[in-house]
Structure formats: structure tokens, C-alpha cells
Image (cartoon, rainbow over the protein chains, first blue to last red):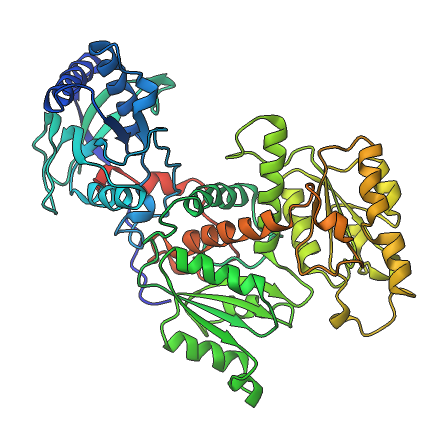
Length: 199
Length: 347
């Protein structure tokens, strides 16, 4: 083995602050759903692709809200999941990540308006990987990006088209999105966004 | 996980992780662009001291689908025929910057030797060592069985194991690394394994293996089998008379047309017939059996690429700057540590 630095010890969380509660998340998603419909001038050719893990449940929720606003839409037919693990540029620097399934809507993504959906936009590298992943699957007409939280600190020229909340953060803080579909606290499913400050 | 050397010490969670990852890799093979950029800039060396077609090609296809660079090294026509030792060969490859070494060797334990010494820094994958182990073959067999077993149960295969599946492995167990790797792995995944062979083709100590042993193929079939795996009669390793004639072997331990018909009359309509290849048609398996709809021979080859992609991905991704004690230990993915390290930082 070459030089072996010590494994990083997880820093202790000293302060936790809830920035969005369940109702806040719901309102933000309702607004994003309407923004998506507005910028697309309707539900024509829309495909929502969630990035695992938490982008996918967000995409499912957004599709339900779009269907509520436009009854011609079948929410299950416009949602997909896009795994970007194999396209990341940090695979040799991060702990091993198991890949998740990629599932596209039956209509595919060729000539569609694809809205990528993720929970937190930070460095932009996940989205970079997602753009590569999309190109291998087809050729959408337009690709847009919707995120629940934009916390800044971009490392690439990428920005979101639809943002639930802009959250100025320090890079020493952690933003955790917890969704009932994927997360529990003390055994209870929760919907919240918290900032954790570490010592 | 640092190396993939054997299935004997591969835990259940690691085995299922490899199978689940292979499911995602299989999906890539069905896409228009059958290539992922995942291992761009990494070098995989196929180090083959023994003849092989499908395993080498399978590893090569797997590495290329993940965008790794592949160097093929066959002992024939190389410095090995001039007497170069394994150590010198390994150090030469190390100096060329190999990130993973896929090794097949006629000596049992050669991959362990590479992994346990400091001759080379790379991840070592055992592609068959002597009569010891062939872990990726066992994993692809388990993958093929799991897909079949889950389809019968009507459940998704991801995350599932082989609990309750009855597997018979028949033929030349004595010389078969495939049988050994399968016995360990299938036990780990919860299947019941029966070895069927003439007494001369069973190794000493087989009674201590976690499986049952039979000398009678028809009796084993009559008791019910969900997957029937035939092993190749390895003529090239046989330096003594293990059975009187090939005709007698074929009649008593080969999967011939009569036994193929017997599956129907026994009501075993969902039993699959497996063979690791290359097949000796007419010896351990008849042409009708090999080409029947029950045969999974080609599915096994296809699944082999997915399994090897999964193995390469799991060994070559992840933080390589892990603590030194991992370097020499047996394969072990720290079971749930990954999720602890994967934080929202990567956004």
C-alpha cells in the first residue's frame, strides 16, 4: 500500500436547526410543480427524472402535484429514476456506493422535456454526472433542473431552473433532507430539512 | 472489499451486494450505449497462466464496458515460458500501474499468494486457481439461479437469496473449482446442494463439506431438483483412470436424453439445466439437453459479464486510501459503513 492517511473521524454534531418542516416542503413542491408547468407551457412531453435516493420520491410527489393541476397527466407515466453512481468523478475518493436501478418512463426520453430532480444542489457534480448519464440513454429536447434546496458552493457552471429554497450555508455545515419515503427519526417517518453544524 | 479470492469466506451480505450490483450492470447491457465511464483511466490486467476463452473474454468485455484499459497477458509466448517467477511477473505488472489483476493459475492458491504479499498493490480477482476456487463463476451461477428462483416466486430478485432451492451438481467434482466455489456460495445463500459423482471423482474430505453427496443421478433427480448443474469432465487434469469408459460415465452420470425426458415425467417442469462450459456434448451433457429451453448455458455466459462488471466496480471504486489492515485481510466489505460515509457532501 502507498501512504495511508488516517480515516476521517466523523465530527460531532453540535447544533441542529430545522429550516423546512413538512408544510414548507409541501408548499415549495407545489410551487415548483406549477413553475414546471408554466415554463413548459403545459404538461406536453414532460418527464421527471429523480436522482436516487431522495430525488426520486421528490419526483413522485411533483408528478402527483402536476397531475392535480392538469388532470390529463398520468403521474406514473411521467416519472423515472436516473442513477448517476457509475458516472461520478469521485468514485475513487468516496466510500463505495452501490448503484441504484435506472428506470425510465415507457415513452423514453428522446425529444422529451426532462426535468432532473434532486434534493440538494451543492457542488453541481451530481448534476454533471446526471447529464452524462442522460446522454447515454437518449436525446431529450430540453433538460431542466429542479432542486428542493440550493445551498451554494458550486464547483461547476451549473444552476437550477426551479429551486425550493435558497439556503446560504457554510461548507462546514451539513444539509440533511429527510423524506418520509426514505428516512425515519426514532422510528417515525419525517419530512424536514435540517442544517447540522459540526464542531 | 479489497480482493475477490474465494467464495468460502464471502459473507452473505457481500455476496448479495455483488449480485444486486450485477443486476444494475445487466441493465447496461440492454441499453443502446453499452458503456459506462466508471473505471476510466484504470488498468485491468488479465493474467492467464492457463488456457481460457470465455472467462478471459468475459473479464475483458466487463472491463471495457466500464471503460477500463485492458492488458491481456497469456503465459504462453511470454517470459513465463523463459522461467520468470510469479513474483517477477507480478512486480512487472505493478510497475506498469495495474489497478486490478485478474489471475488464472494452474496452482491452487496463486491468487492468495499475490494478494497476501506486497508484490503488487492492485486488487486481485481469482479467475480460477488449480482445483481450488473460481468465485466469479459461482457468483454468475448464483445470479442465474436467483433470477430463475425469483421469477418462479414472482418477486424481484434484488436483495433475495436462494433459500429453499435444491441444487444438484453432477460430474467431475474432484477436479472442479467451480463445484467448490458453488458449494460454499450456495450454502451461504441458503440453497441445498447435492453433489453427484462416481466415488473416484469425489475429493477426500467431501463428507465435511456443507452439502450432501450421492452416487446416483437418477435417485437425486427423483427426489426433486430445481437446478441441475453439470460439470465438465476435465480430461486434461486426469492422470489416472477415474472411470472405465466414457460411455459408462455418460450413461450413469451424464445428463442424457432419457434424463431430460425424466424431468417431465417427474413433474419437474421448472428445473433448469446449467453448465459452466466448455461442454463435452455427448459426454456429461447431451445435445438435446444443452439446447433445450431448460438450458441456461447462454444466460450464464451473458450473466458472467454482469457479475464481472460488478466485481470490478466494487473492487476498484470506493476509497482506496483505506487503513492498511484491509490490505492483507480476506475479502470483506465493511457491511454498513458505506452509508455512514456517504453524506450530503457530494452534492
